[in-house]
Amino acid sequence: MHQLHNIDHFRKDSTSLRKIFEPVSGRYNYYQFVAPFKGLGTIFPGDDLKDSIQNFHDILIVKTNRENRIIDAFQYTLE
Image 1 (tube, rainbow, N blue to C red):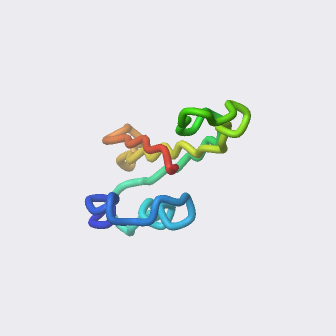
Image 2: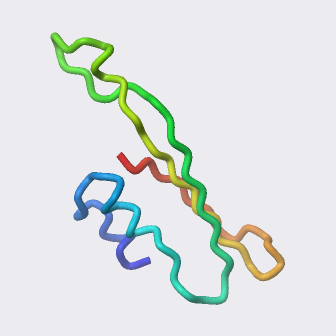
């Protein structure tokens, strides 16, 4: 979880950011879901709207106890 606290210091691409969300051994269960979607990226004056459609990836992490009751959850858009 230490890397998660320093997330702003990582390169902003989905490959390097995914390493932050790798599970660590412990007493909780860990579930990770990744949802790719297309969305509008940053648009500057004069840009073509067709060029602003980009691929994004949302990541959802759910932490549960041994009975699979949700303890905590976290959502982050990788890009």
